[in-house]
Length: 316
Image (cartoon, rainbow, N blue to C red; front, top):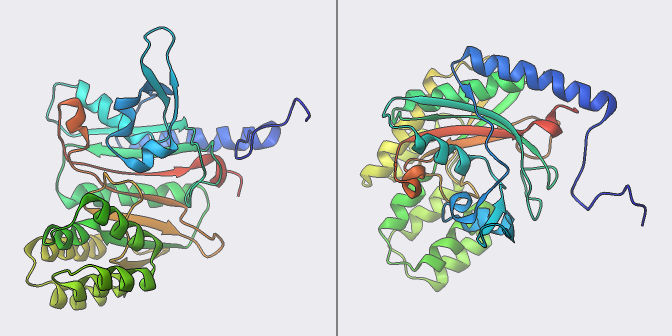
């Protein structure tokens, strides 16, 4: 094997490609700075407990090793959001804080979002505001980021995990069953959902089936309100989606409502969103709300944000 070869899923930038990346990185950071988002550069390595946030998915993607200095288990961050939660918890303030970053991450295996195991994750996160105005702000910033990358038109998919969570809360399910059901929704597998509902007696089984099928333009919101009108948490989540879609600037974007949209990372709690383009086979950018993510660090705050693989998108 040639000494210059890299492991599968690990890549690099050099020459013109590296120059193009650096030019776009600077423009992005200028944009985020103009919008009041302060740059943070978290360390690549941390104690495993502070990197995982009880997320099985993040756990599986995290490289771990024993630190010879402390004899404690360390990890290489596979996702920046846990790092931002730790940084935010250090501040003795309840004020709204805005963060941005462009950092390399490393994952044990590729997934449906990142193009390699060594993406350079760019993103922005807003802490301390539970109002949907914060979700609108980060969604608009995500769209501006893609516009800066000359990617348009965009299809913006909006969903809300709170509806799925409200349905699950009504059931007497074990954690393993909830995890299985969640994966079924992430895969969008109608046959697997039918099989799950056959094997498990659930109240409102018809609502789970309806949830996976509810997708379309803003008109589907009215259908959703009719179906979930007896669930206050679900009704509130649907109303939030209606408000967000109503205030977004629809120039160069098409808004789709997708109630089956669940994120792979378990820490998301509310509104979720993805950006698509017809020339790409998967989401270009994604994000959502993750209230209480800093609880592990002693500071539970509302938060929302987005991220994308700048190394991948800068080369297109």
